[in-house]
Structure formats: structure tokens, C-alpha cells
Length: 593
Image (cartoon, rainbow, N blue to C red; front, side, top):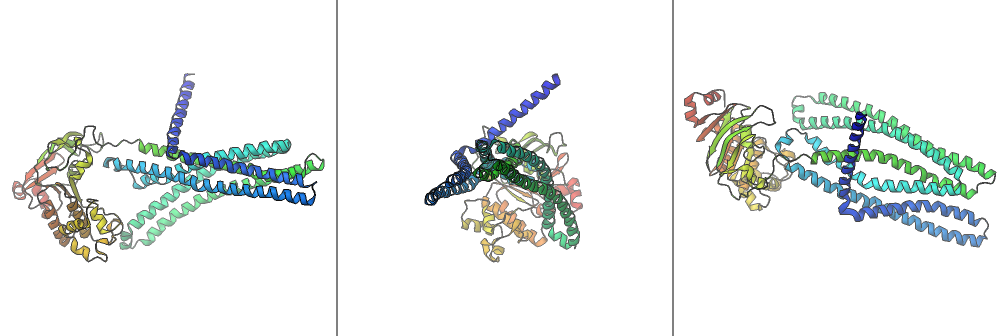
């Protein structure tokens, strides 16, 4: 008994939660109530028109039989004109609900997409470390499309279906109850049949989506690495992999189409069965004089009003499942609270002096995991140039990522100009920090647009000055359209050194008091490194600078070199002093730093 109470309580809780979610979903209609109610009004009006037209046909047939020809023609003309008018009304209703109804769905989808994309912008690196871009993209495209289709078509289809089904049943019961009940019985069987096949098709479609996702993933992987594929001559291997995935997709499609064939052929058969049954029973009733010819014609005209709502209601069940599942995934994403955000008492920071201090800082990427940094203490004065070296995994990049709060410390605190960075507004903190990374990310677009990303309100002249300072102006002027040259996805049309100089130009344009160079030259050839290094040194002048380096050439002249190990900062000093110690740094240099 107690177990039953628990189960009932859980089910009640689930229902309440579902109702709460649906109420939240309904709030997205609020800015568009006018469109929503207009859409429902025209949906009802259109459904009403389709119910009235067969009655007018019946009226014509019943009336003209005993009338003189001139009177019959006049009556047919008047009723016919009324029917044409009703057709025009139905046309207008259909146009409105198709265009404006879909636009309402598009507006809601637009609002929800803005909401979730804005939420994505607030989430920290820790979130993205555990996510796949394709899955996040699916939430903002496929899921929102399913939700908008539900919000647009759901209420409209329910209203139309209920009105047509109940209206047709009431009218046909008044014409002939026996035939009406016969049609209703067939429609109920039709509905059960449709629901069974719809469930099977839903499962098959889910399998199809999984298969096509596999194919898309394989295509993306192959095309993104097309240079590697061609360099190893593995085009045939990629084709074989693709063909296997494609065959699995065809196999899943075969099952889907088998169910679709059963569904559509069955629905058409039931529609014809209603017509045949109505015709046969009606003919028998006409033979014994209990049914007029006009009533039989009326029945045949109403058959579509019986079968169409069934199809709509079955489609709605699938649409509801897809839309509601998409909405649950939307809510799941929106419920993830940003783990890095402004505190209620966050302070503004106009222009930092550049003093950075780490005080007993420890950090691990996830709770319970091994610490990447442990009790680190470090003080860097404004304008100081600090180089960070150490073996892979020692925490060099992690340490620098704590300064702009890409991650928050697990213990201790990081201070900027004597203020705990957790008490500084994020936008102000990051505006004072410039980062030049090894893996430069350039956006699809022009050179001008990519440099201006450092400061969106900068003038063209300021962009050009930044490019000159980064030693990028000359190669830009050699481009076909100079600063308006399109550089392709991720700057694919540029060399590594050119991309890096555009990245430095962005940092020049931003003009921050603090700089972080994260292995900015490690992937470049010697000539490109020389040019980029010259640009970096020019950029670092009079700024607090942190340099993560794997090459000795980038740090040899640094006045302060920090050697990081798993235990923290093991050594500190100039290149010459550290070599003389013969410690960790000396061993790194011997190993080819």
C-alpha cells in the first residue's frame, strides 16, 4: 500500500512538473497574443466554411428538383455565388494561418534562439570543455524548430480537427444517424491503426536521425582533414568508411519506408472504405425510400471532414512529443547556471595599471580531480615581462587562464591592482587583457573585420595603424582586395605567420595593459617566427606581459623566467642565472626548449 502511494505521488509530481513546464512554454506566446488569437480565429472560420459548403450542396439538390427551370437557375446562381464567396473566405483563412501562423512560430523561435545563444555566451570554459559543438548547435537549430512547429501548428490543428470532426458528426447524425455511426466506427478503427503505425514510424525516424548524424559527423571529420587525407593518399579509405555509414542509413530507411507504406496505404484504404460503406449503405437506404439522394451526396462530401482530422490529430501526437522533448532539452540547457559571473558587488575598472598577484592559488578542473596548480604565490609588477616555461602539463596555460577568469581558482585568490578579480566586472577585467594564442582563431570574413574584432568601434585608419604595428600591413596590401580580402573559414587562405600577425594586430587595436602570449610562435617556421617575435616585442612594450614559451628564442631576453613543475614554481630568474643553477630550467634547455 505504501509502495502504491509512493508511485502515485511520483506520478502526480511528474504531472505537476509537466504542467509547470507547459505553462512556461505558453509564456512565449505573450508578445504575440494578437497573432495567436487571430490565427485561431481564422483556423476556426476556415473549418466552419468547409462544414457549410456540403450543406449548401444538399440544399441545392433538394430545392431545384421541384422548381421551374428559370427559378432553379436563379437559385443555383445565388447559392453558387455564396459558395464562391465562402471559397474565397476559406482561401483567405488558409493564407493567413499559413503565412502569419508560421511567422508567429518564427518570431517565437527567434526569441528562444536569442535566449539560448545569449546563455551560451555566459557559460565558462569549464562548460565547453565537456561539450561537443555539434550537440550545442542541434539545441539551437533542430530543437527550436520542433518547438516552434508545436507552438504554431499544435493549437491550430487541435481546433480545426475538433471542429471538423464534431461538426461533421453532428450534421451527419441529423441527416442519418445509422450512416453517421457507421462512419464513426470506421474512423475510430482508423485512428487506432494510425496511432500504432505512427509509433513504429517514430522509432524508425529516430534511428534515421542517428544514422544521418553519424554520416554528417564522418563527412565533417573527413572534409575538415582533407589535407591529411590527400597527403596520405587515403581517399579510398575515406570513401569506404563513408559507404559503410551510407549503407547503414539505407537499411534504416528501408524499415522506415515499410512503416510509411503501411501507414499511408492503410489511411487511404480506410478513407475509401468509408466512401464505399457510405455508398453501399446509402444505396440500400435509398432503395427502401429512407434516404434521399441529396443526403447520400452530403455524406460523401463530408467524408474528408472525417478523415483529415484523424490524420492531423495523429500527426499532433508526434509533433507534441518532438516539440516537448526539444523544450525539455532547451530547459535543461537554460538551467545550467554560469559558474563564472559578476558578483553582486562587482567593481568597475576603467584602465588597469597591470599589477598581478597570485596568493596561495590552487586549481583543479573538476572537483575531486588532481590539482593542476597547488598553492602558487606570484607577484608581477606593472609593465613587467614574465616568461613561463615547464614541461607539458605543468599548468602554464592554466595559470594564465585564471587571470581573465576563464576559470575560477579552487583556493586562494588572483589580484589585479590589489583587487580580487572576482570582485571586478568581467567585461572590464577582460577588456584590460589581451591574448595571443598559438592556435589563432579567425572568423570567416575580411581582414578588416577580423582585426576590428579587437575593438568593434575602431575606425578604418585605427585598424590600419594596428596592422602596421603588427608588421601585417605589407602582406595585406599584397592581397587582391587588400583589407577587404575574404580570408575564408578560420583564415584558411592565409599562412600561419600571416594569421598570427592578424591576431597580434587585433591585440594592438585592443591596446590592453596586460598581455598573455600562449606559445604564440611555437608552430611557425624560423622566418615567420622572427617577424612575429618582432611584432610581439613591440606589442609587449610598457605592458604587463606573460609569455608561455616552448622555444628558447622567445624567452632568452626575458628579465624574469618562471619554471613551473607539478609542485608549483620551482625556479625563478634570468636565462643566464637559471642555466648557472643547473636545475630544472637547465635540463629543459638541454632537452631542446
